[in-house]
Length: 498
Image 1: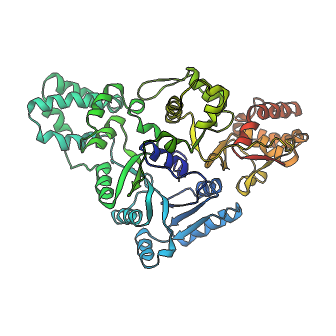
Image 2 (image 1 turned 90 degrees about the vertical axis):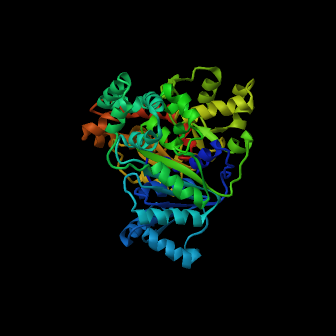
Image 3 (image 1 turned 60 degrees about the vertical axis):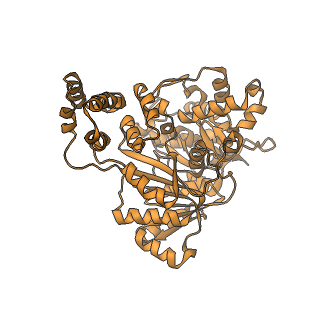
């Protein structure tokens, strides 16, 4: 698993919902398998965040299996299983003994950094077709092109030979509109394109895109998965599913016009200047609906950033998004406090006067901009509990009791978010002190940790504004952090009141 890519069950279900695919309701049991996953800790955290799920990881050798099992045991996470074997071998094993792997709701593979061989990839696709349940989601990260100009070369290779002179000249103009991001980073290619346009010599530019035949991983994946009963559901990066946010403005209309073109995906690849893709595919038969409540009503939505850090405007690769309208500000105010569903917001005083359609649309924009994220559970108030002695929740998170916090973020499991939540080193230190001794004695617990950090100036700079920690500094840090963050810690299930 990779921290730059959200393959959590709730996020994948949300991507499918954007295409009208009925999502699994949070809380229902499911099975999830990951292949070619490099980050064992992240998978264990995902399992701890989704206790209703059963997680499987196929690893290459006995040493990897043992390491995974030892880490899961140390964190007391019991719903993750490590399986050993090569992809081709394991496919053959499961054909002989189906009990080795249950029917899957989610299958994930990321080969962007560690590529599969052609035989391994064929086995992966066969495994996906064999083991994914109807409506199951296959998340697949891969390199679509080996070089920066791969998508451009592929489009020229596929389109130019069939064009007459007039079509070729028009194609140059289309390349210019689509390739704003690419040509911004490749000024020599941009200069050659302008020269070919100015001299009405498209063949001159096309010749520079020649050479060895270029393959598109996007097309190869479509050719491999569609006959196996899969439908493309979207990109795991939610923003990539919104052309108006992710593509250059001049390219929007042209991309829309290409929607029914067999080369639509390579066209998007070129416009987005991407060599890597993170597809989500759905296994037939699909359960589709146009009912927004059925698609999005079962999710809750939260914002893990502090309210002060949420911008009033988001600059995207396409057009900027203004978040200053009352509906956005009211949603942000509430979602930075606790995760809420669409129904929660409509029932809240801040939701009065807004329609469900308006709220759904605004939340989708917040998710697409990376401000909010879909989540699996909502906060349950602990009004009768004693908040003076907060305790870390779950065996996975209790490792914070034992570790030495450095200048790096700490990842904790959140049963509300359904995935890992990043906690700043400053917050982690305060949370650690509160868990160890409670609020009343927390200064005495925090000060030694700050003194330890002070011996490493680089790490200390991420936590403190001074090189010499004092009781007063520790006290102010606790007051500031608790006032800003403790409600969220409870809301995301990172702490509970003893």
